Image (cartoon, rainbow, N blue to C red; front, side):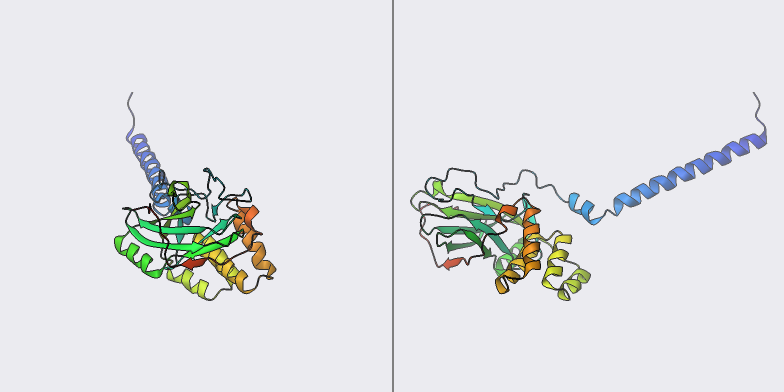
Length: 259
C-alpha cells in the first residue's frame, strides 16, 4: 500500500516528538538519581554490613552484675554511627555491681591498630557514664583515612579476661558544611541537638543534651528531649538513669590486652 508524502512527514514528526518526550523523562530520572536527598545520600554510602558491633551485652555475667540489667552503649543499633566532633564522647549505661569494677576503653583503626586505651573505675552504682576520644586520636584516624572501632570491656575478673562483658561499635567522622556550622553556633543547646539529629550526627546530639543536664538537671525541656532521643533508638528505659562521672585511672594490669 502506498503512503503519501504528507502522511510520511506526519509519521516522522510524531516519532520525533515521542522520542523527545522519552528523552526528557529519562533525563529527569537520571537527574533525580544523580542528585539524591540527604537520606538517600546516607543510604548510598558504603555498606557496613558484616562489621562487628554489639551495643548491649548478651553473654554470661557470672556474679559481675547485681541488678540484672544490661551493660549498654547509648548508640543506635547500627554498626557505624557518626560524629562531627574531633573529641567525641561515648555514653554507656553501667548496671549496679557488687563492688567497683574497671572498664577498659579501646580505640582501634580499621587495620586493627591500637590508637587509644584508657581505664575508668565504677563505684558499683548504676548510671550513665561517658568516655571521651582525645583530639589526637581523631587527628591520627583522619590521617589514616578510616573509621575507628571502639570497645568497652567491663572487667569482671582481672585474672580471666575471657569473662569480660564487651561492647563494641564503629565511629565515622564527618565534616559538616559551613552553613550548618553557622546555624549550630547561633543555636541554643536544644536547637543544636535537633540540628545534629537532622544531620545524622548521633554522638554530638546526645553529648549536647548530657552536658546541659549536668549544668541544670531541672531543665524539663532538655530532660524531655533526652528521653525522646533514647526512645528513638529503643533505649527509653534508660532515660531516667542518673548521669555519673567516670573516674579515669592511670593504668590497669591485665594479662590479656586486645593486642
